[in-house]
Structures are given as C-alpha cells and as structure tokens.
Image (cartoon, rainbow, N blue to C red; front, side, top):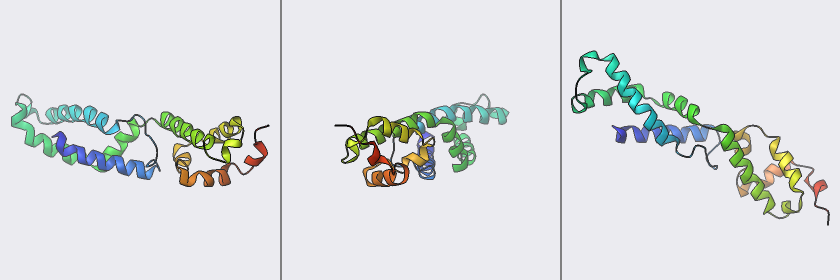
Length: 159
C-alpha cells in the first residue's frame, strides 16, 4: 500500500514546493513525505475499518485491496497538500533561508565588504519564506540587493 501512496505524496510535495517558491531551499522538517506517509496511513486504515464494520476483524490480507482503494480515493492531491502544509515548519525553513542568504552575502564580492549587521537587518525585514526563497541562489543575489538593499554601499565596513 505504501508503494502506491509514495508517488502521489511525492507529487503533492513537488507541487507544494513549486507553489510556495521553495524549490531551491531546504525545507523543514526535511522528511515531510515520510512523516506524512507514516502519520496518515495508520489513521486511514483505522478510519476505513470504522466505516466498514463488517471488515473490523478481518486480517490485513483480507482487506488490503479494499483499504488500498479507499486510501487512493480519499487521498487526492488537494488532501495531501493540506496535510503537507500542516507538517511544514515555516519558521525553521525561513531561518534556514536567512542563514543561506547571510552566507552567500558574506562570501560574495562586493557584498562581503558590507557590515554584517546591515545584512541581518535587511534579511530580517522579509517575514515570508516564499519571498526570501526566490533570492536564495547565487543567480538571484544581485536581484535581492537591487530590490531589497539599494543602499548597501552606504553600509561598507570601516577600514
């Protein structure tokens, strides 16, 4: 049964990442698809058994096909997206993206010549992971500086 759900969960997770501009960043917790599978499947089996009292005492082999049909019918992409959203830790993911941005800025010339406090303040102004995530690679670092830190040259380190 797990083998039938894994592709659907992975598809939903890819949709979630794409819709939330999270394809380029580490997402927390890191194992959302596995957590979803491990938390949802036992609940779905219990729910199925409670709805089908005549199968309550049947062995797993006897009801496996019924459960698979039930789970696959109940477990559409929209349902999975809502479960992924519930498991997703936006704060931890946002902090990870902030850390990545700081590392890139501190190791990219000429931005490495700017006071660290300035970058911290600038990055911390962005409160939504999807907004910050669009800048979280070296190809978009200049866009971040142009759009969010146009006064960066005024904050160069004192020599």
